[in-house]
Length: 118
Image 1 (cartoon, one colour):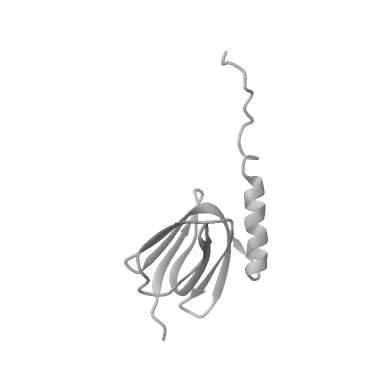
Image 2 (image 1 turned 30 degrees about the vertical axis):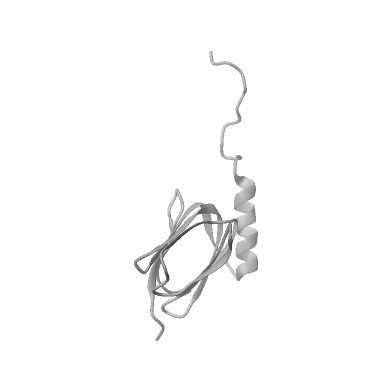
């Protein structure tokens, strides 16, 4: 049986996924990174795209992510994301979901009027 490590994928609204994994793939600003148990400590900025997690039970979870950071430390991987959503299907569907999250940035915010207060 493959060694495992703990993964938490967190957005400002919720914990999107948490559990034991045997492998994780994420896209960073430096390129794609694959994580196995006992990986060297690392911090990286996440790029909009798919995150793939192979769970301890043998299932595969795909998550669309827009922005944030990935940290690997002491056999724990934390993805602190700006926005994230579970995706049905594979990496292509997760990538589409991530692009949709990216396009929503700013839609939830009040538009600036540019005028002076009062």
